[in-house]
Image 1: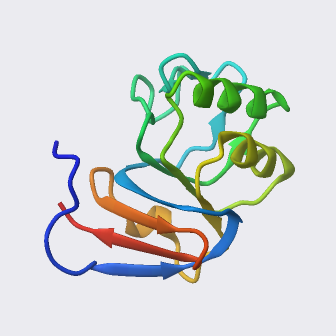
Image 2: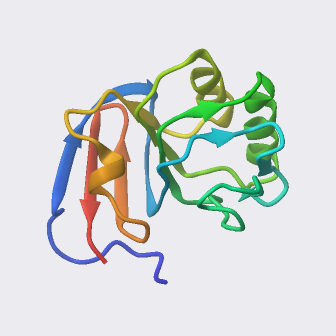
Image 3: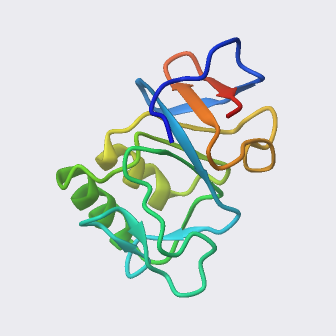
Length: 145
């Protein structure tokens, strides 16, 4: 799949609340499942390894991870910090449930992150869509592939 934004205007624009500032864009990786940092992710590759997770075997490295939020222990932040150090972290994070785990994980990942959207991004964005996250402006744009 191409790493360039498709031509034309976005097909969807959502507004949300900034968790971590910055601007990033990339291919969307969408899940309805919460992500478990401790034991659910291989930080060396950015791959979901949790046995029954719908994204098992897929890597979020360099992608815009669209998901409900974090589950599990406080190991979430350590896992995502290591993924960042290994250059396997998401380019941006888009989530719908704010918790202390996800807040700290987003901060240590240092990737632009948004939450509290005017519409549900999990239902509207598809894996493979191109997504631009401008967390500073609180705007997410979706380009269909």
